[in-house]
Structure formats: C-alpha cells, structure tokens
Length: 338
Image 1 (cartoon, one colour):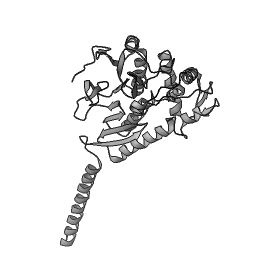
Image 2 (cartoon, rainbow, N blue to C red; image 1 turned 45 degrees about the horizontal axis):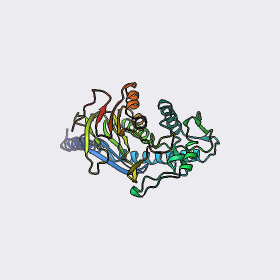
Image 3 (cartoon, rainbow, N blue to C red; image 1 turned 90 degrees about the vertical axis):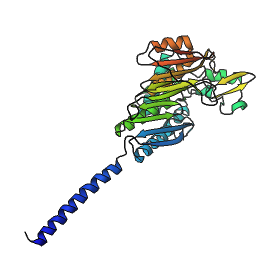
C-alpha cells in the first residue's frame, strides 16, 4: 500500500470514529437524564395546573399544556364553544359530542347512581346562583330562586345514545367541576406513559396523580392539608406510587356570613351547602377520576355513610377529617405520617 493510500485510510478511520463519537454525544444530549425533571405550570379550569416529569423533554411538557387547553375548551360550562356549554344551551335538543365528553358524562351518571343522587352533575342550575370567589363579600341566593333551581337537578335527565346527548329537562344544566379534573389528570398520565415517561407528578389544583414513584425508587409523599389553615399546615402525609390523592372539603371555596360558613359543595336536594360533621375527605385510588368524584360524594354523604361506601369498594382508601379535628381512616393500611 502506498503512503498516500495509507494516509487516506487513516483519515477515513478517524472520520468514522469522529462521526460515531458525535452521534453518541448527541444522543446523550437529546435524551434527558431520568434524575432530571422539567415542569409545566399553567392556569386552567380556574386553578393552577402543574406537571413535573422526570426524563422528559420540553416537547412532552408542552404537549401536556396543549391537552389541558383542549379539555378546558371541551368541558368548561362557561366557554361558548365547549360541548358542555352547547348541551346546556340546547333547550333539550340532541347534541353530538366527542368520545371524551360522552365517557365523562357516563361516569358522572354512574356516580350519581352510586351516591343515591348526592353527587349530581346537573347541579349547575343551583351552583350558578352562588359566588364563592368573593371571600367575605359572598351573598346567599334568593330562596325561591334556589327552590326553582333544585327542581331541575336530576342526573337521570341526561340521556346518552352513542355520542348524542339529550337533556330531557330543557332547563337542566351540567357542571362537571366535581369530576373533570380527575378525568383530565388520568388523560395526562396516559399521554406521559405513551411518551415513555416513567416518573411524574400531576397536580390539578390539589388533585394529585403520580406516575410511578420517584426516580430514585422511593414513593411520592403527598400532604393532606389541615382545613382552614392559611399557612399550608398539613395533618399528615401519605406515601403513594402510581396512585391518586384527591381532597374535597368546606375550606376550599367558601365565604362566611353572620358566623356561618357557606361552601361550594352543594346538596342537590336543597341547593344549599352540605351541612354535616365533616371538614374534609381525602381519597386514595388508582384513577384520579374516581378520587375526584368520591371525595365530593363522601363529603356529601357524611362520615358514617361515606365510610360505609368506601369500605364496600376495592382498591379505594379514604381519610375523613371531622370538625373536631379528628382523622378517621378507612383501613389500617393507610399510614399517615408527618
């Protein structure tokens, strides 16, 4: 082999080695380390949404934000182009909806049946009369207006045939606020799983859903807030992996008037806030949609009936906080720690 050919071979080998090394380095740059996380924060559904994912790139987090916007535009009762708004304004005429909306409405009906009507997604006719955003400036609706509103609350008036939804009561209105955030959290988890993410923390205004555990193999520790605590004090924490933790209570959105607290969890039978011995219910479940609906359902049912319901269900656990500050757990498997 001549000296010129020998030098050419060396250059080719060097170039091949350089290309291989560059490819490896680029691959390392484009694949985030599993120990590193990225966060997405936005405001949707009138609440702060945060998704933290380990080993994900920015494109994946951007897609999570797009999904939040998509579901808000699909399910919000106040956005004119949403499917729920169209149903509410249909005056009893059939409305064609997406698979997601039909699925969520069926889940809402299921929990209406399970709760004996204490959870009712047609609560909007009453909830629209209340304003819990004004703090001490809230006002109590006129009693006759509430009485009229209550006459249109009945989840059984929702008829679903495939993807067609009809309200048999033209004056009924749907509000999915007690179940939608859990459903959306589940959809975000599905997307992240399909995108190859193994560790994530999804938080939709207190609806917390975990994908796997932490990247180091430990569980996520989720705090249960002390009701009416302005400084974020927690009563205890639960350790979870691949699970949902959702809390509902009278301290979330409320106003005080003449020494009484008026909160956003309404009794479908009266249109007034539920009155019982509870301040809070926390549900631990596999699916966040179940935790969302059950936290409201069990709060409305009260301690005794709510505990009875949870103990009749598999793979669901609950923590009830009564007004005297006592914690009541549905089983000894719940380990509350500070």
